[in-house]
Image 1 (cartoon, rainbow, N blue to C red):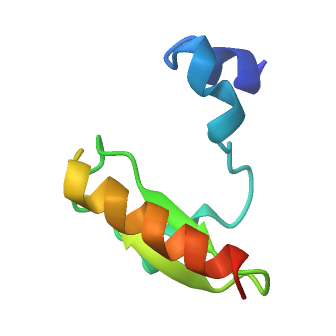
Image 2: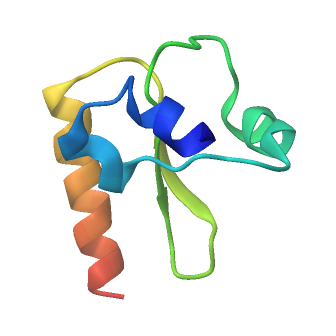
Amino acid sequence: MIDEGMRSGIPREDWRSVVTVYKDAGRIVRATGNENPRNARVLLLDKTGRIVWFHDSGYSAGKMLELKSVAEGLLND
């Protein structure tokens, strides 16, 4: 029921990229902040689960290129 409610506000093509948090959401908020509650938070994790890239300031082509570069670097590690 909760998942269906969440999906109703998210375009179908984005469903595979969205994570619904049921427990310990406070840990995520402490790690990523909540200053811009309507912005998407984009996190890139390495294979150990460490946050290696984070963005929370709206869309930016430059930031997306930066994310791509960091992600490609992780693939080469």
